[in-house]
Length: 199
Image (cartoon, rainbow, N blue to C red; front, top):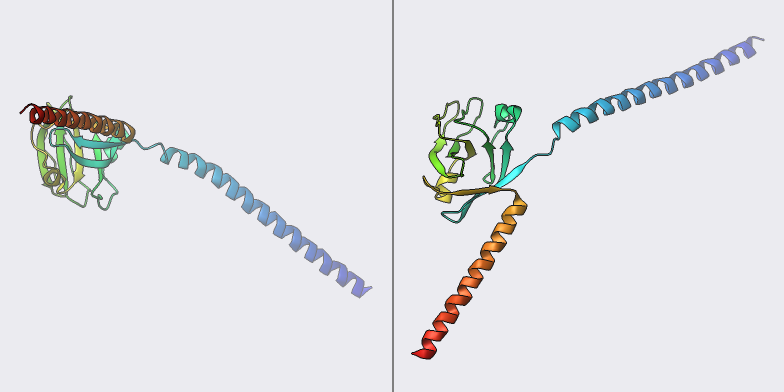
């Protein structure tokens, strides 16, 4: 009788361990699923579709940046460049609306381009250092914060007119300008041929 009782106890403890393991796994799975649900909500909030733009200097016919984030909400303007360790050469942020910006908490220098409502350059600040407050320009509507040396490399100057748009619209603009350039070249070559034949 003793051996039967011992066997029953062993089997019951094994069964209990087995059921306990299943219960633990179910609780872990529920926690994971619940966490995934909550995490999914947070991921949805964090991964709001990021608006990026291309910036082209129409006056100098040069690209300033190809990947500028748009900061047009209170939170994105407040956050700005905080949390970034550095900016790549094609990155930046376009702060709308803004009269001026600061680099408090930003560990790298930035170039600032102040724009009016027609995207004309009204002020330039090259390599504004860390933990500084930039100049305030009341006629300014928006500010581009770009990596240091961007103004120099793009040869941007006061009065230049910029084109700021989505990559798709930029591609359309470039295709239209290429077609216009080709048409102009064809007209010039036809005019030169007429002069040679008449001369």
